[in-house]
Amino acid sequence: MSLLLRLRRVLTDERGSAYAAIEMVLVLGIILLPTLAGIAQLPRWVDAKSTADLAAQEAARQVVLADTVEEGVAAAANVAEAVVRNRGLDVGALSAVVVTGDLVRGASVQVTVTLQVPPVILPGFGPVGGTISLSRSATERVDDYRQFGEP
Image (cartoon, rainbow, N blue to C red; front, side, top):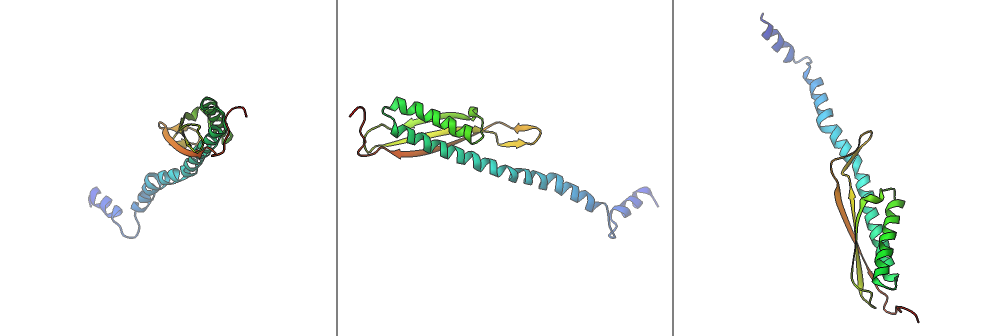
């Protein structure tokens, strides 16, 4: 019997073959592990979204409580940095705090906070890939009976 025939018989033997072991390694290495690694990143992404939401809400509140728009923008930037720092993210992740609207009774002020977060962090290696821009907005209404300046 030739060597090729023996090899074919061993690989196609129905009593048990090496194919099962090879398939298991391929399934675990190529499909299952990357899928589990991706699922493990979901809590980080949810936390980054929650951080951006909270930073936008707090920044919008600071703007409507300020006496001038300039003071409000400065207070919004400070409180957004504090929220990002307190939630455990790098302050450098905060890339923009944009305030739109005016401080007029009954008007609305909108604040958009943008975070730059890495898509994947591998233990032992750190961030992999570039960054994902995550923007969240919050709107706050200026009080109808608000008094500006000195009474």
